[in-house]
Image (cartoon, rainbow, N blue to C red; front, side):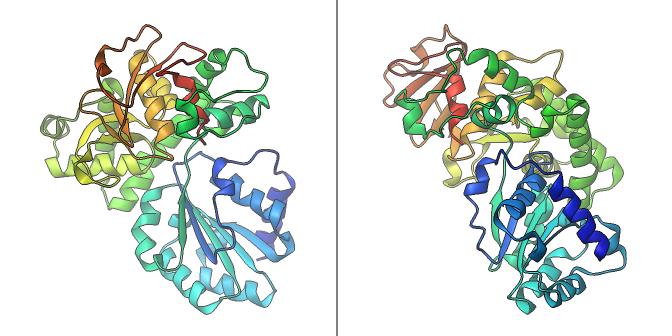
Length: 389
């Protein structure tokens, strides 16, 4: 066990705490058990280590990864017993879904050790949700997304700006201190600003690794798929990436992949929950995630530039950015007469020459334009929607 502490303190020494992700302040760190999920590569490990270094006594804490060799012949429950006897009050477990029977053991730890607070993370939302039923009355769950444009400005360029609500954006209150021309920065963000690791080398290679690990390991492991079925996930993502925004024809895709219609719908849901695509639904379901799928997008614009390098469609990039940034705080659904609908507000997305024809006569409607720096009346710059978290 001493090796676990040695590795943990080494990570803390090397950790930078200057920048915190948006969700850091949203988490109630006083909860006895916290689960943090989200796509691979968005910074969950860094976030929990920052909390330890900034807010806790490291001598009363331990961070471990469930993939550590320690767990080859030791159980989480046994570790918890040992830690409480040593006066440890906080246990952080990364990659929890890599540990067999994780939800069962966390439940036991929660019940047997009320003095021990637990935070667990999972790179794939799929595995966490699968086991969350046992923990539904115990764990407080949070979901984390990649960088907003506002966070990118701070992390990559040291530019600090306020968070703006949707109403702030629509009433032209957005400002970036010291930045008169945000469009060059915005263009860079669209290509490589969503993932914090873009500051490091081999960005495109890292994205490919995330895609492969998600499709070849995370989802098949969750859904008990065989290798050949796992390959179909990659084929499906390839089809979507070349056609986005993609209006799904389930029957056609099923024929192409040699799979059933029901399987294709499941595959799309798995890939969506893993953070690689986003499905735009209509309002028929009434609440988030239950409506009929109208369009399928890649989850974020960095994925577009990586997967569709030869054919990145500018219209798709604009819509993907808008959808990706607004769905963090709002229910975004398809509009019957335009592109998107948020709280009965209609949004039409386009370039700087986009007109009002599509939304003429529609109350509470806005044209969102790319390639403009400032807004006026019901015209809003696209980049400003990246300032909402």
